[in-house]
Every structure is written in structure tokens, then in C-alpha cells.
Image 1: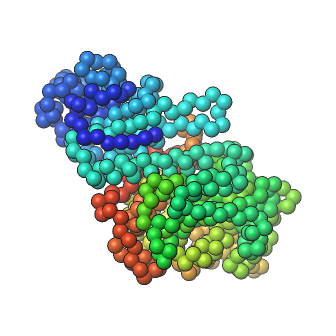
Image 2: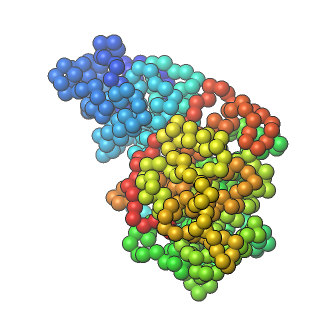
Image 3: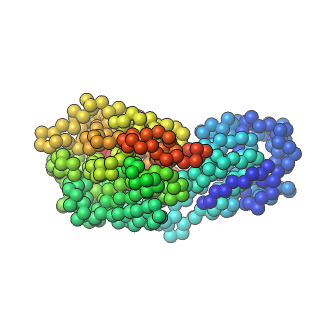
Length: 520
């Protein structure tokens, strides 16, 4: 899907060669202030008759009317242009058009619009029109190819907003694609090929390590998870070098369990098919790197993806086994379904070699996080207040929200083991916190944050599918970091600035339903 922006009045916009047009109409705009074009007269008449109230979600539809070139026209009220109101308006408008054959769509914004509001509208439109096709014999492909934004006033900020929305949607949809694919179409090797395809640009590099290289590194925890699967593990290292080599990178670590049976501690059968989404963290890292190919910000980013299946064959790791992680710490594996933290802990140790300014791991880690936060906000855990604040603010700006959770040392009591340095699970209480406390042991030497996306990475039920979260949050964070004129969290050198008019990325994904089947 391609986006562009034009400076046009409503009167001129409705003369464009388009299949359909959506007009976003805020409550503060009265028809008398706009002129006498056919749409404005039509809205004025509807308001006089009480058929169009200026409240969120109110909608008018029109088909093949004289003086209006697009076959379909939808006017929808965005009320005060708040995030939820814009999301609701775009979803309502697309519902009115989804049965039509729309390849080229116009999106006209009446009155003033912020860059965040425009990005939100475009990303919501992309989300509403998304269609998965890869493994369908007769797929219903997305017809919508082009969205042309028109406003009476265009600014550099709005033009940049469209550019950012293009990058964001590209990244989110790539993340959705890989998370939605069935596990036999998204093996660790498949993820490695996808990473290499993304990292073909001048500033990008990708290295893929196999079982021999991982064994040489001493990643005993990662290998323990992989040993029960016939699919060979892959450790994917992606690099984007957009700044000087002296600048410390941000490292993103994405959990890449391409299918999770739970291992010997096997999951119940209902909804186990959704465990293909257990590589949602890895998919989000791929999505962020895809977006970086569009934006090319002035910063360095490393992506680490430990990818494997968690299977229960005769070689699988058993409850009670003790393994040695790359850090040298020994781990008693009490529950093989708590495998995500095992692959992540070795990746966190590996991340230290980059001397990062920050490390963020992203994982569908615990069912306890779903209980705590539902499907609205991602769980945020961090040992660094500055990093936590940056991520919280990025979530609020983008609409891909998170909520900071505690990391009191008392929560680590349940991880004590008589037979190893640490156990991989504690009791049921505060399960998302104890999982984060486990990871924290392997992230002592850098600013670290953990995003538990178990509740936000995908939807269940009739609307089953990946959400692409938290690509929006991460891209917002990186964009702001690239433009920040302040010292990094670790490195003393200042980061170069982007164009100061570059707006933040904004996205409010649809809220998924909570699910019963989750991580241990």
C-alpha cells in the first residue's frame, strides 16, 4: 500500500480520479465555513434534517452522485480528533467500503490535523484493510493499493507524517505476515531467510549462526530448548548502521519460538494452534528493521533473534534438568514451557558484546501478563528509569501503549534453587514479574527493558491474527532517540540529530481479545 499527500480543497479533492473517498469531519467544523461544494451542501442538509450529528462515528455514505468523481464517498465524524475517535471513525468508514472494489482511495481531512493524527488515520486504515493470503489456495487479496491524503494546508510535518506512516505500515504488516504464518511456513530457517532479505541495503548487515556456532558460544540454555526439535535452531544477528561506528547501538532482542508445544510440560490441546504466535517478538524485530529501510534514521540498531521450536521428542529437555547458560550461570529447568526466558537469557548475554546504550527484549512470555493487563497494554519491565520513561512516552505517543510493572528484589525469592544458580520458574503468583526477574539476572551490565507482549501480539476468535505490536512503540522510541540532542544512556557522545520537524510515529492497533491459552 502506498501513501501520498496533496494540498487540495474539498471541492478539488472530490474531482480526483479515485474509486472512493473518505472525508474525516471534526465536530468543530460547520458546513457554512467551508463553501458550496456538493459534499458540504450534502452534509449541511443532513445536519438540518438531523441525519448527521457531529459526534464520534457518525457517518454518511453516497454513491455515484453528479459533481463527485469517486463512485463511493463516506463522510465520518472524528469529534475532537482524539486517538480513539480517529480509530473509530476510520474503522466505521472502512466498514462502509469493505465490500466495494476500491483500489485507489482518497482520504480528505477537513480542517487542521496533527501529524500524529494523520499517521494514526493511515495506520488504522491499513490495519482495517489488511488481509492474510500466504497459505490460502484462493486468497482474497487486498485491492486497496493507493491512499491519497488531501488537506487544505500541507506542511513539512504532515509530509513527514505520511512518510513515517508508510514505513510503520510496512513494518507492521511484515510483522503480521510472519507471525500469522503457520509454523511449517515459518521455521527458524525461514525467519533467517526473511532477515537476510530485509538486510540487503547499504547500511544493513545480517549474520545467521547455526547449531555449531551457537554451541561454540556456549549458549546452553538456548540449545536446551532446541534439542527436542528436528528443525535446526538459528541465531539471527541483524545490524543497521545509520550513525558513526563510535555510537553505541540499541539492541532489540526478539523471542523466536516458531512453535511452542510446551515441550515435556506440554500445553493443553485447545487453542494450541495459536502457539505459532510465540515468535511475535521476533516478528516485531523484523518489522522494525523493515521500517528502518524506509526511514534510515541516524542511529545504530542491532536485532537479535534466537529462533527455535519447543518440541517434546525423546531428546527434549526434561523438568529438573540443569543447563549452563552463556553467562556461566546454571539454570534448573522446572517447567519446559517456560522456554522463552531460556532463549532470551543467552541472547541478552550475547548483546553485551555490542556495548549497547540500551537493550530491549520483546517476548510473548507469560500468561500472567494477560491476567494483569489484558489485551490493551504491553507489560514493561526495566531496571533503568530513563529507558522505562522513554518507552512509556513512546507508547503513549504512538498509541501502542505499555505499562511499567515492578521489579522488587523480593520477587526473585521464588527463583532460588538447591541444584542450580537459579530456577527458570517461581510460583504462580506474579508470574510475569518473576519471569522478568529471571531475565534481569542476565542484563546487569547495560540499560535493559523487557516488553511482555503475551496479551497484545495477536487476536483470538473470529478476528484471529497478529497485531504487529509493538512495532509502533519501538519505531517511535527509535525515531525519538535518533532526533534527541542528549547523551545516550551508556555512551557519552551525543547522538546526531534528524530533521527537527520529523514527527513521531503514531499507531493505535485494534484491541485484541484476551485468550485462555498462554505461556507458563
